[in-house]
Amino acid sequence: MKRSYRVLLLADTHATVHPEIVALARGVDHVVHAGDIGHPDVLDRLRGDRNQVLAVRGNNDTAAKWPADRLPMLDALHNVAGLALPGGAIAIEHGHRANPATQRHDILRRRHADARLVVYGHSHRQVIDDTCEPWVVNPGAAGRNRSFGGSGCILLEASSRRWTLQAFQFALSDWKK
Picture 1 (cartoon, helix red, strand yellow):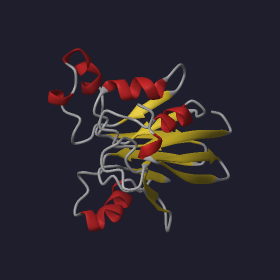
Picture 2 (tube, one colour):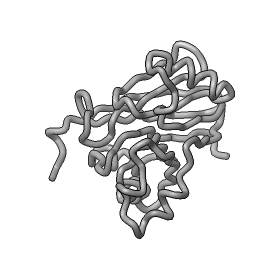
Picture 3 (tube, one colour):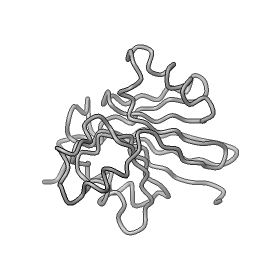
Picture 4 (cartoon, helix red, strand yellow):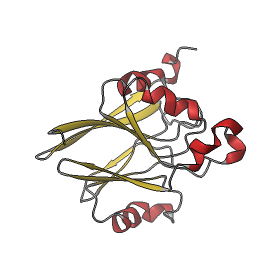
């Protein structure tokens, strides 16, 4: 295992992903997508030439919304996934099964007590809750839909000694067509 990793956290692309987020993905070791991917081309764009992409299935990732020839990729997505890193592990799920929403962070912390960080999506709102462990983050919507101020993602830099989070939001007006 390397000494440190850069991991791009995102969710809720709903078939589109902001070009600035794709550019950020080129400089990381892993990309984590917390569901509602919307179309397999999003994962292909994030993967690029070398990136490892770990994605989970969201409530909108259904066979009716994916191209028939790419259904095996959809079927391979799990509801929950994990990624071991120096200094701890990330737990990933979409978050739509952690209700009520007002208790979502407490539910996710209990559900993934062994993780250092829980990544979820679903609400489309960017949140970094590092008040206690595991940290709970929602990178916001990385696509166009309900982005609440711009397409978002979070960059995690993880080493055995230190984990840091950096939030990004990109204006929809900067989206090149």
